[in-house]
Length: 163
Image 1 (cartoon, rainbow, N blue to C red):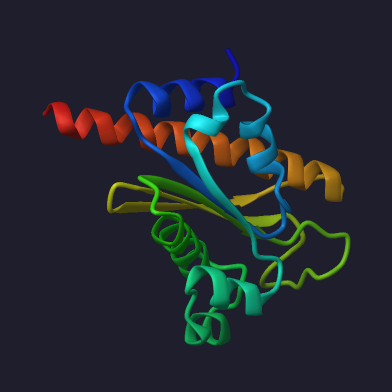
Image 2 (cartoon, rainbow, N blue to C red):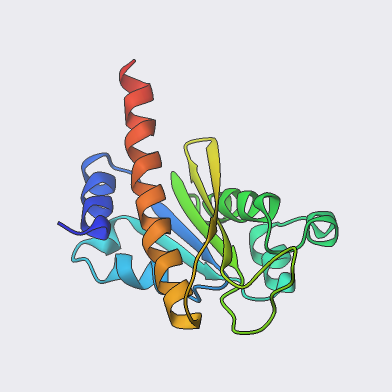
């Protein structure tokens, strides 16, 4: 069973919904979820917020966050995930923001730097990644890791309920 199949099944079994907020992956995470039959039962909305303006308008990312930390930052990924869940009225959301390349990187924020945020029922986790490869490879790895993190966070949210 693929990661996305596990996610759709988990969400469906637990009567939960998800949203995605993507920048550098441009809808790749959502596309992988939509490939699974039954995704329409659990996927509320997907936001492709490539520009900072879209991040602010659609997800409520604070302008001050973008100014101080930039779009490729832990803070931005957190606000994207929280904002997507809120805007879509979803139990969970996953966000991806990064630099896929080949240009755009700096010493401080190199090509391949990606932040993935996961929001589930009021809790948000953000992980930082540095992927090697070309633009397509960075985007693919980002989508794969976003799905892994989402599933892990979903499972953890259920464990907390049982305790």
